[in-house]
Image 1 (cartoon, one colour):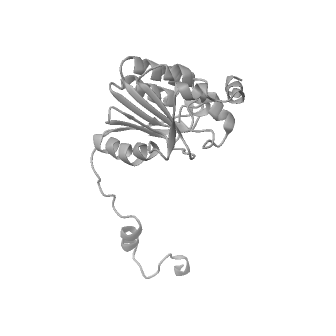
Image 2 (cartoon, rainbow, N blue to C red):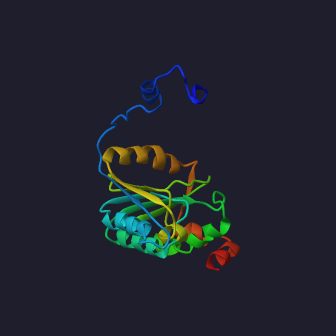
Image 3 (cartoon, helix red, strand yellow):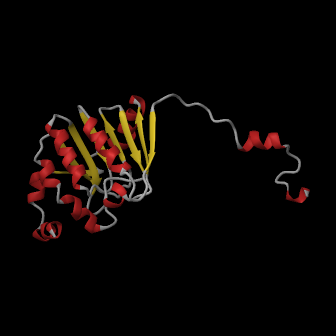
Length: 204
């Protein structure tokens, strides 16, 4: 029935060539892809902790939610062995759910006690999930260090070993996020200046 043919005057080979062109090889780089499943083996936590544990010199992180204690503990341990860490996350004004902001701020004081860790809060909402270790290993995922993704989410995870990609992310993501007009640095001094009401809500 020619009435049901997509383009009667076009051959099948022409359609294939037009709509399904051969993929062009963009380059070669080692990539590990994993997929988390609810109540599965905890692919998210395994990969996040592996990146932090393997970092030797630097670790840059941008995540919307960083709720899990094991994640923060791993950052502290990395800082103690000399890794310089920059953690970028959302501010109270930038977060989509205020209680979430209070949850992860419970860990700030312990983290900032380490001189090798800096925390920056974005003025506008971000839902990016990137980690770059030692300017060559990249983590990207649909999930992050929060309760659902940690071991219950349907999240895809990519670990990529590429200095070129790491440099692109540093330049196109972290550089913009760390611009003076894009974020505020959180320090032990700034935490002391917060209102009593903010401190109470964070503690609760």
